[in-house]
Amino acid sequence: MKKRGLVLLVVVLMLSAVLAACGGSSGSSDDKQVTIEFMHSSVEKERLDVIKELVAKFEKENPNIKVKQVPVEEDAFNTKVVTLARSGKLPAVLEVSQDFAKVMVKDKLIDEDAVKDVIQKVGEDSYYEGALNLTRSEDGKSYIGVPLTGWVQGIWYDKKALAAANFEEPKNWNDILTIAKHFTNKSNKKYGIAIPTAEGAMAEQAFSQFALSNKANVLDAKGNITIDTKEMNQALTFYQELSKYTMPGSNDVTEIKDAFMNGTVPMAIYSTYILPAVFTDGDPSNVGFIIPEEKEKAVYGTISALTLSDGLDDSQKAAGKKLVEFLSEPENQTKWVLMSPGGAQPVNKGVLENENYKNNEVVKAFGNLSNEIAESFNDIQVFGLVDGKNFTKMGDITSSGVVGKMVNNVTVGGKDVDSELEKAQSTAESNN
Image 1 (cartoon, rainbow, N blue to C red):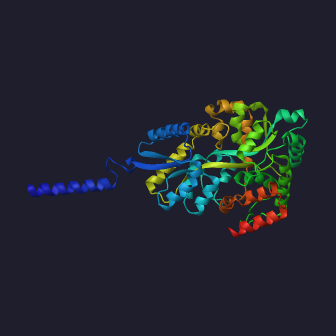
Image 2 (cartoon, one colour; image 1 turned 90 degrees about the vertical axis):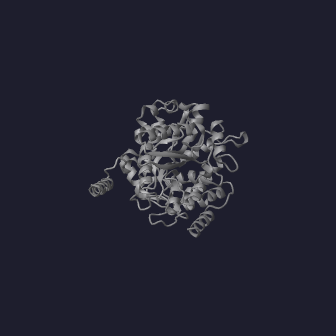
Image 3 (cartoon, one colour; image 1 turned 60 degrees about the vertical axis):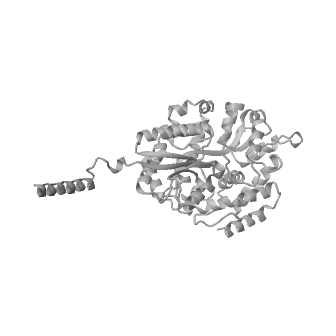
C-alpha cells in the first residue's frame, strides 16, 4: 500500500508540473508584477499632481504595473539621461525633445521598433503630419518618439498697432521689413520687431524659419552640410538687415517677450508660450500670428515626445508600451496639454475635439487662433529634416551652437555674412 501511494504521489506531482508549464497554474505571466520608471521634466507641484493622477488611473487599469516617476529639472535632464545610460539604469519611458531624441538614437538608447508599435497602435492618422515628421527615424521607416505635445514659433503682431498705421497682416519678408522700419524710432526706444540675436538655440530657431522659407537647409537629402549656399546667404543677409530694427544688444527669450508685452515693439518672433502672458496681461483678441514666407511657408516647431529605452526585458517593454499608449489617448493627452494651456499645443487631432480642451478658458480666449496654430504643425520645417529623412547629425550641429553663433556674429557683431557662412560651414564639417 505504501509503494502504491508513493507512485500515485509521483504521478500527481508530475501532472502538476506539466500543467504549470502549460500555464495551467493560477499565477500567469500577465499577473506578474512589474515596475517601470517614467522620467519627465515636469517638476512643478501643479504638474506633478496632474501626472500623479494620470499614473494612478493607469495603475488602476493595469494593476500588475507599477510606475515610478523620475522628475528631473529641464536644464539637467539631458545630462541625467547620459549618466543613467552609462550606469545601465535608464528608465523605461522618457519624455524627450526631438533634438535630444536624435542624440539618444545615435547612442543606440532608443527602441525604435517599440516606439513604432505604439504609434501604429494609436494610429498615424491621429497626429499632425508635421509632428510625426519631427519624430521620424533617419531612414524614414520608423520613429524615435511618440508625439506628446508641441509648440510652434512665428511672428506675433499687435493688430491695432498695425491697423492704426494702415498696415495689413504681413505676408512675406518685404512686408515684415517694411513694417519694422516704419515703427522703429530709436531715440524714443521704440523698435519695429523683436528678434533673437543672442548666441543660442533661439537665434537658430528664429533664423531657421527665414532660411527654410527660402529653401535653404543645413543638410541636403544625402546628409551633406549645406550652410554656405546662395539661398542661406540671402536669408542671413535679410536677418542681418531686419536686426537693425530690433532692440540693441543680444536679445533672447526674456528681452523679446518683455518688448512685445510692454509695447516696445508691435511684432515679435516667439513661440506659443507667449500666449499665457497675453491671456493674463494683454488682450487675446488683439494678437495675430503669421509665418515668415518667401518662396514657401516654414513653421518652426518642436515636439515633446515619449520614447522607450533600448535593452528592456520583455515585461518592462510591454509595460512601457502600455504606459505610452495610455498617455497617447486624447483624454489623457488633453490633461497633459492643459498643464500649460496656450503654450503647449496639441499634436494629436483628437485633443482639439476634446470638450475639456475646447472649454479651457485660455484656449477659448484666443478663439479660432488656437485651431490655426495647432494645424500649423502640418507646415513644420526644421533644419536637418529633408524629404522625410530626419538626420540624427543635426542634433550634434544644434548642440555645437554653430548656427546661433553665426547669427549673433552678423547681427550683434556686425560681421560679414559671406565670411560667417564660410566659417560656419567649415566648423560644422570639422565637427561631423
